[in-house]
Image (tube, rainbow, N blue to C red; front, side, top):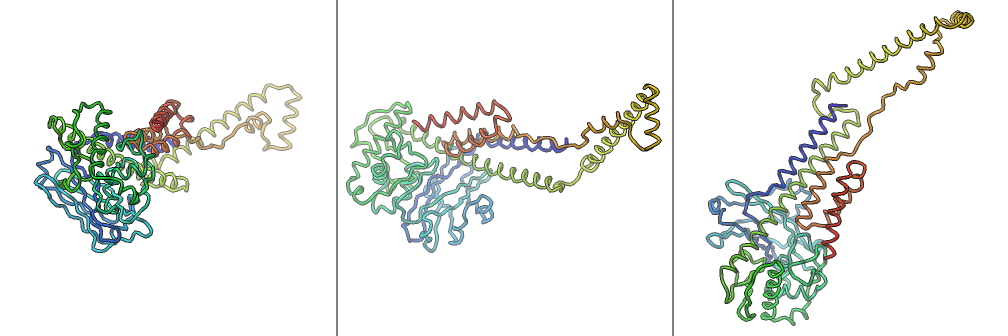
Length: 457
């Protein structure tokens, strides 16, 4: 029906509007950092999450507060609410005048026999905004860790460090690197393969690492990474450049690497650190927008599927408007009028044809009429038998706008380097795009080639 096409078009435009809204960069600068697990397996959980803020966020510092997340939100997002069974205490603490920490604690140890990880959603709000982020905390002793898309080596090291005795962050990083050399692209600790499985370093690997060796390794890795990014760095001796470890850090930033200033220009080092912080904030904001976008698209898709199911069952999912009530009647009256006109034309044509044949034909027709007064003339019967008055529903077509929405979602996945999810979305597009729009097929194949090229490197 035409009005159903109008509703479908409006729905597609709504999806596109949501995509455009969430892809626009946000001015929000408050983000949540990587978790730092302070407790050991089979101990009551204690974890700290740094709150990263910028200079523009100072007016909102006093209004920062924890935003509790209810169990219904876990279920709506498809995240296990198992953490709520332990009644965690979530508090916001100020460890410095301009630095905050979110502290998560439980009174009893978390059972990690079946699953060494537990999920938790942390929310933070302030006077003109808020942010929420999902974390998977390592609460059990594991021998292997699977790298999630966007996860850094320092984040994994900060969670596994309590299981390695007295090893600091630098020693944990070097031990993970030595135990898993194939998990790094180009041998750089800053390019960790998503989906790779990291083996837990054993005691022999840890005993072969000295603190000085670990600090030198971290310094050289960061310097090589800066040079690859085209940044100008000054040469410093290994014995003067010191990596800041969690014991020397002040709470915020313990989950990532920082290079302390050496004998060079302090302004250059400060600029580098500020750039790293800005990049981490942008990545966190992009991940949050993509997660919210996926949630909204999934909700809208459920509404569309419910509408289609109701229409197939002969139900009307929405309140009937004037068009919905009178539309079928108008169509029925129109079909009746067309059928009546067609029968009238056939009868007139038959009478005109019967007045022109020879006397023998007229005699035959007269005898036929006398034998069967209700018989239909042969010409009319032939024309009526060739007509097909069964109205078949119009063939369904794939929605080009829905494919474009999924194509934009794949681009967002590529932006945050979640290549597996991007590849899956592109494969779904390529299954049907050739029947809808060749341009969508070309764009999807181009993005697929880009993913393959990145994976090869």
